[in-house]
Image 1 (cartoon, rainbow, N blue to C red):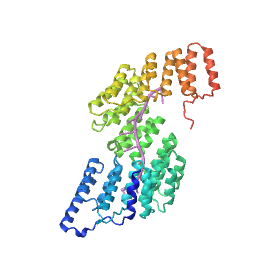
Image 2: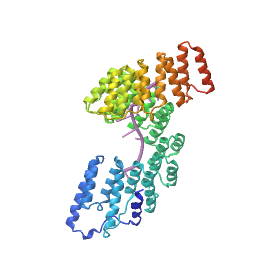
Image 3: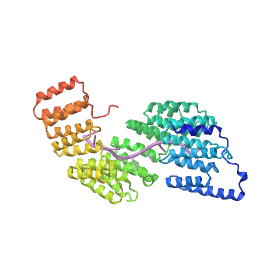
Image 4: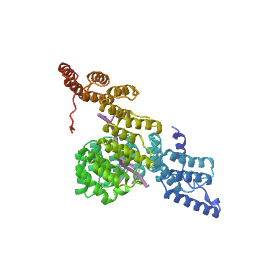
Length: 492
DNA sequence: GTAGGGTTAG
């Protein structure tokens, strides 16, 4: 890795600042003013990449790079949080090189802030190798007990799924704060280690809303909705912890999976009271989605229409289109799509998937094809298997089985899957096409033999056509192959 | 300065 060559340079670092005595006081003052100005620029708009880059190039051209550790660290932080975290490493390297090329300067000495941001940049850049190198520099620099720096390292390992190393770093910390515990817990939750996360949660001395939300989210992500919601209730009622917008985002999927319309309303009201609905578009969008999934498209629509056009983003529109699709409201979904385009928003693959789904559920075949063409030609989006799935379903539902089969056969072999054929088999069953049903069943068996639902569908096709012998033959085959029909409800 | 995040074929 490119990092090796420049990282080892820091081992001799002792002090960042140059010998400033030689600078005249006027120049020094000018530099301080300039630094102050650049710092305020960064602090004013830390998330605007353009500003960060401008400040960076100013630092390089004016030679101010090694004059203020505060400015350097702030810039490092902006990069680590941006979409280009590797620029943190470039900046780091430039400071090293400034020293390397002018021996009159004192070598840079990176503090706990710099290391924290560099580790975060490694995390966000998914570059564990570099992170490990920083870890050894951190130890050499004497920050092996520093809570912030070590927490950043625990987070790096935990977020990347290297849970053994995360625990090692966590265990070796003589002092931990709530954030340390939280990064460990959320890391474990992220990688499905829920029980382990739970035991740490029970063990941690002071829990805050992030700890609670992390665990609630864990249960819900593992489809353990009632346990997640029970924990949420305990958090609010017994522990008196105020939910945050992230808590709301975590519990809404549980509410929609349980179909708890009442609770959706409750959360909606709570969001109004706390101002989340107005301040966080993600909460707004998730409420639209939850209303729709709880069976109330009217509430979803009403809520959606209350949002101002300026606040609605692509996900808001996609959520309502996908909601309308669930109810077979194809026409309304198409109208929403067109309205969205008028506002200047550019649909993405999910928006197209939702509108295609709406066309398929609403029986709008020609519109569906038009959207597919539009997606490919106008928006240059390469269709994925789900887009094809909608088209097959759309043709299959309306009984255009030959076209559906032809389309399925034309799907690139690298992406075609068993779901496509299962969709077609469902259509064959619905429209009673025995021959195609047999053909499609054979295709499915080539890919996967263990799913009982396919045998059942084919059995129904035979039985429906009065071919009971064939049906029984199939039932035998199913027993022989030990195919299990997965029940319609969850076993947990 | 360090932690959690919305829409997705059948």
